[in-house]
Length: 331
Length: 263
Image 1 (cartoon, rainbow over the protein chains, first blue to last red):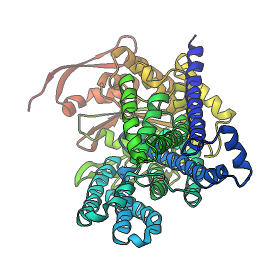
Image 2: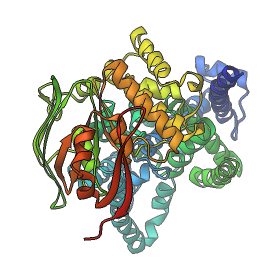
Image 3: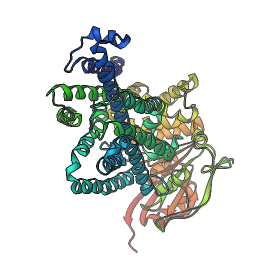
Image 4: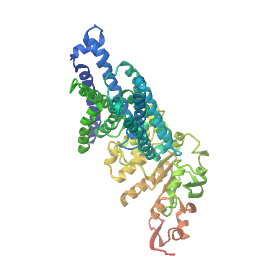
């Protein structure tokens, strides 16, 4: 009987993963189907494969499909980044923001948007750079013959506050130019197309491969530093490497879609509540659910109050927070 | 006797405080060593240094003649396993999965468990009596079962030396004895050298071949349990007056604390 329970237990995890997968497929279809021009599922399939010069093909190929893909990739990167950080820092509140990704990218992006609005195309690389520089700064500040998670978290808070002051300062002094900055701060996917797909894709592929390879190391790391070292894990190197991976994943996403902080915190956490603490399941779960959540929320954000598009960050917070609270209560 | 783990003049200071002033000792093969001493004497710090979890300020620890700090940490893990007191015991991983982590150092990073790994995992689970719990989650086990699961993980490393930091803390007396008997069995049957920090003097006396007494960061006395008791070492170290009797069945000494000595 006990055997049965166990089998069911593992089946349950796989069942949940399949559920996430279904959600993602559903999101993918809805995102391509809905909008000012509805396209039936059959038509979607047709025009993806053949360029028949129809308006549907035009809309789908140039707007909806790439946007959907960007949403998937950004969702994957942010969720993976968050799940890695929650393990590495052994802190359930860790998210890409904690290693300065949001504040670094935010400040760099806003400097471009406000001070050099004529160079808007520089926002993604600048944001990427800002995120990486902020993450490195935090790491260097927290380094003291090794890395203690709690020091990283506190250094992160301090650096983020410092950079946040810069963001607020700029917004106050240039209050007439704040609109573009606000859109970037809230994050969004409008007008994202193929160039953005190619910008994120390499990171997503590398991230997924690393996630598969590193899941056991992370499983061992969360047992505690002394235990992990005893088992033969290079604790410091693993922590450093994983944080770097998380930083690159989040930076690549944030530079393209703006500061969508929520996915990186809520998705991995929800996955953890639903399937447990084994990273062999958390990683695939975060990948599928991260993509699904962002695609579905983006679809909702652009269709619910059409023709007005609400920032997807707001949708995620409004829909995600109550769902998350529900999971917490149920646990 | 063959020595397998040598501490050579270890000194450890943390924030300018000398936790371990000087410690040298050679641990021999297939014996049980217990490190005892008052609270704050540096026992746990010493064990962390012996298990490369804390690099000494000076001195070295050599495993089969090679420094544990300078060689590949995976190579160390194949010969030396450690169970620290602080571990995340509330993990929801399954016992069998936890035990399989013990094979981490034996496995190339791109590979899963081969048949040898699976045999070792099976062996570790059987040896610790965890077969019927192997598919249970760690956080659903009782304290004693949980500790046995962690020990199974450690011996799956197939170590020659096993370091344990107060393995019986938080266990009731029945589970304490059960665990110590398991450790004793691992030592006698598998010839694993055991080095453990223990709190209970009688348990240390009963289950150890050698006792090491640490006070204020120094090794003040070492030797067999009888030697310790005959010289009234406990009175000097712990400031406790007591009587010593001989256990009728085992012939081992029993220390019964009677009163605190106030200087």
